[in-house]
Amino acid sequence: MLSALDRRHTVAPPGYSRWLIPPAALAIHLCIGQVYATSVYKNSLIAHFDVSQTAIGVIFSIAIVMLGLSAAVAGTWVEANGPRKAMFVSACFWAAGFLVGSLGIATKQLWLLYLGYGLLGGIGLGIGYISPVSTLIKWFPDRPGLATGLAIMGFGGGAMVASPLSRQLLSFYDPAYDPSNAGSTASGNALVWLFVTLGLGYFVIMMFGVANVRVPAPDWRPAGFDPATVAAKPLVTTANVSAANALKTRSFWLLWVVLFCNVTAGIGILEQASPMIQDFFRDNGTSAVSVAAAGGFVGLLSLFNMAGRFAWSSTSDVIGRKPIYLVYLGVGMVLYALLALVGQTATALFVLLACVILSFYGGGFATVPAYLRDLFGTYQVGAIHGRLLTAWSAAGIAGPLIVNGFLDAQGEPGTLTAAAYRPALFTMVGVLAVGFVANLLIKAVPERYHEPATGGDGNEDTAPVAAERSGTR
Amino acid sequence: MSDDGRSGQQARLWISWLVVAALLGYGVAQTVITAAKLFTH
Image 1: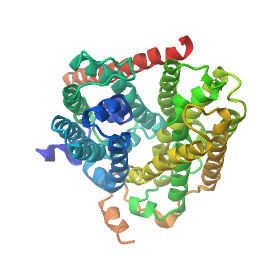
Image 2: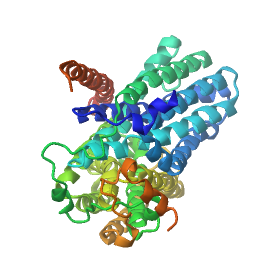
Image 3: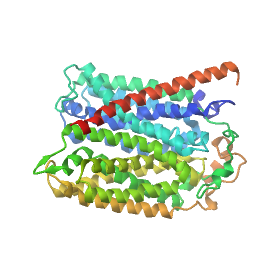
Image 4: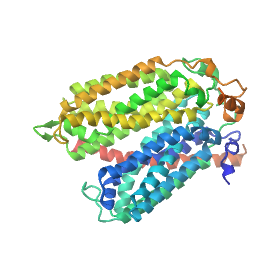
């Protein structure tokens, strides 16, 4: 039955609309984006298992580490087996993660939650994240930034769907639970049913993606598209580089640094957003920003994070990938410095600066697959993307460490002011400067790393010999 | 592609985009309601 999911059975027939592919990709990313909504039921899990915050926080950390690892390790498998099988496997792991996790909650076995949501779910996350990327790039050679921006926007949108949905489901399964009361926790039974509902619901939605996704025929081109117009742009290649060879190039590691720096800086704000806005406007120990307003600020950041993924990635199709990262990192440096120096003068200014910074954070995620396509071609771009995502995992550790390290040295939470954030924010300016320089140093990949010409467009279907050769270099 | 195939594909296009638009629309609407608290509290 699984052979029906193989790449060779998913080649699109003539006339197949490429506009069926973005919703297929969105169906996956909207579901796996739930991973950023785990804070909704964190307190309920702590109360149910009667454990520390750290013991529950580890579940999220395992999932994110597994995301990076599975994307890096399974990238080549995803390229070889095609998007349909990858999406199906991702859906199975993601749904199984919820179901095994629900079993852990029902039996009060925390290790089952680690194994389920953390390990199995994390594998589903990694495979799901990269599964549609190279397919979208092949369907939209004329607008790869728009295509990958649409999909990766879904990952940002997934948390926006899952957060309110989880609150409403918990209220439904446990009428005593009040989501508007920060001290209220849902019962274990409600958590079990939440996990079962999300697991089954996400599986069904992800099957929409599995059913609709197709790879283009090797000789397919969009109507009126001339590959020469794309190749004429700086840094854009028509050659192909294997995932194994990409790791040997300087450009890959420079781009790794670029992504790491951009994500580290963004996570610094995201992770601390709610207390940060309250601390910036604290006078004589009392903040002018209420807890509810701080929650609103977090919501606004989510919207800009999601919108930036689509808007900036699409803009990169027009102005180029290197220039757009110079904007993310260069303008980002100016915005971080302004936030540190004048952010406390007006709430509107603080919110504006933070929102634009977060839009750059999202844009950095969404533009990177198209940047990889420009540098390494379409041949194994999904696998290369998977390996690059280890920068995300590393930044997920570095960003909060930098911010929390500085803040811990400044005083107790609830007593901090804008001045306490300056060392962390100026450090982020330095981090972005490193990324800015790394981006400037990125150059076209030397010809010795290119795959031999096959006569096709470098799709896996047309380049099996090159794939074998690349392993022997 | 035959006429039947073309109309079937149109239906798939509509359903697929409607499903993701409904999900995204729900998420955006709920987040806008939350974000509004920044300006009302």
